[in-house]
Image 1 (cartoon, rainbow, N blue to C red):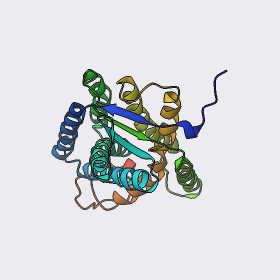
Image 2: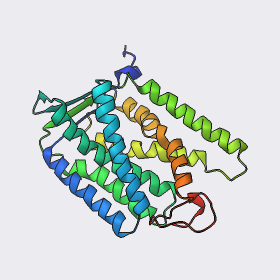
Image 3: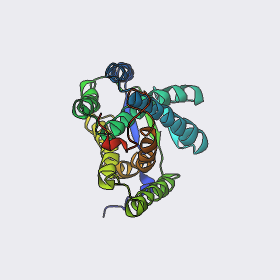
Image 4: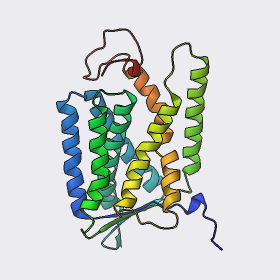
Length: 254
């Protein structure tokens, strides 16, 4: 009889090579350059903010405070210094791309299809392309200590959106669309990790995919919506001062 799998059993694990880190870093620089050249300064700034935020949460929260994060290089458990460097790359990589994905879809950028497609292609193709590279680095993270906190933040945020939609006189953003963006961003790169072999396909792999997609990035969507709601009242995408009617970003042209 199959044993029951509980949420506390979820231990997201990744194994990757030095070459993967190198090429992924090049891609991040390339993607930021694309945003800069296309004058998507607001999107670029928010993406960089996402990378910094991910690092603060991952290193100071998960590693130092919760003690739930481990980094192993060449089968040796690493201390704070090397752990910080690995988590900095991971945080910038997924923080920048995740937050850019969210911001591009949230504001319905006129070039959202090629920009999002570029991210999806990289997420899925990079692990497959480098599948033969020997994995020297492994990261692990237990989740039982804080998933309940994430669930509480998600619940409070979305309840707030529902209350706003019910009682605000202003036309509200589609909560369903917001939810789908929040779920899809983590679902796609979590699925890419599984397909590319970076995340091992264990008995908890599918549960990890579902729970992380529902919770980990999605919990921030109501708060990201609130930030974007006010930012675009005062600034355009190119960071110039907004002179027009004070309308939400999804009602403005890209």
